[in-house]
Length: 260
Image (cartoon, rainbow, N blue to C red; front, side, top):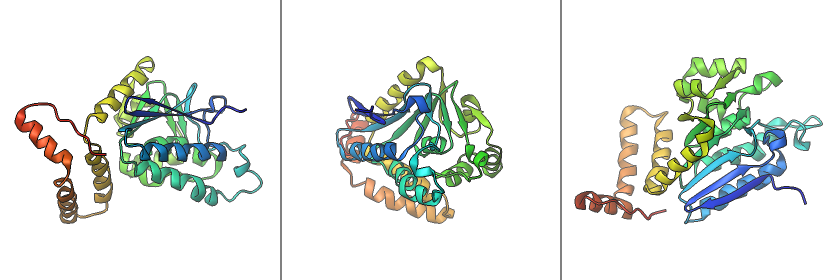
């Protein structure tokens, strides 16, 4: 039997999902998508999971779409590939009920780079790089890249990265605000798991709602954004986690958040 394209493991309340096509730098295929989306759905459905880490096997995170995949040959409708695979993948990551961390251990190119950027945190090894490789094959950024890039780094840098397809090293990606953190290669997974375990102890519903309202506020004017905040706080104020957080603050003890 062939090796699975996606591996999953659970460490306490952290679900680790590993893209597992190392010989092809974990590039996406239809078969990998058929395993990856269900793995994310399973993590979302498991109430014992309070954080998700996504990484790649071998020396790369994900080199984007595998152009040798049968889904991409013979005059394939690339738009249909986006609708079939990348839209559900990106939407799943952006709506997870728990925080998602991309542990970028090597090259993240094309859809692989933007898949990482869909996550709440991107933590990269210092040797890792990000490449908007689409222009090199006559395409435009996908997997949410057109929305993510200008919001993360501004229009000028988004246009520059997307049009040139230049390699961006991890330290520079941190400097311009594209990713959260760059760590020494040997410290990557320890650092990522420390962050994941910190998030595990936090109120999961509030973290997921924080993601939602920040994204939703982007096109709003200031007054409408405050209304959005008020509506979100109204719901959060009724939660068990809010009551626990207040009680813990008053008692000067650590809070024990349980909502999921």
